[in-house]
Image 1 (spheres, rainbow, N blue to C red):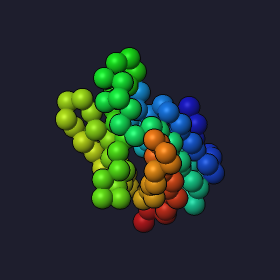
Image 2: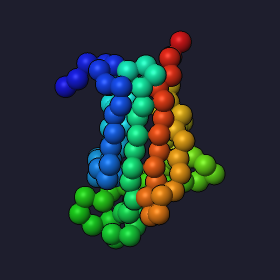
Image 3: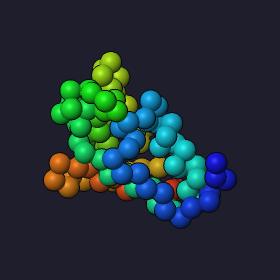
Image 4: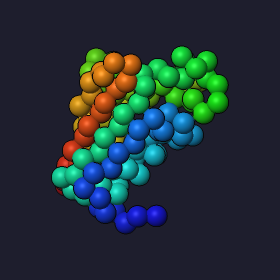
Length: 108
C-alpha cells in the first residue's frame, strides 16, 4: 500500500500478536520505514498464553536474554532481530508490556 521508505516512524501497538505471519508484518513495517527512521512495537508480554490462545491471540511477544522473541502455539519461536535484516531492536519491559524500538540501518 505504501512505497518503501515512506515513513520516518512506523508503530504497532497491541496488534502484531494477532497476525497470521507476525514476522512478515514487522518486515513490512521496516520496508515502509525510511533509512534512519524508527520502528516501534508495544505489546503485552505473553498475551496469548494469558488469554489461553483464544480469539485473535496467536503469538506471544517475549524477552529472552535481551532478545525480542515471538512464539506461537505450535512451539515455533523466532528471534525478531535474527529474522530482520537491517534492524536491531532494543527492548524493555514496561509493566506487563514490552516496548521495542529499532532504528533502520543502511543495508549495504
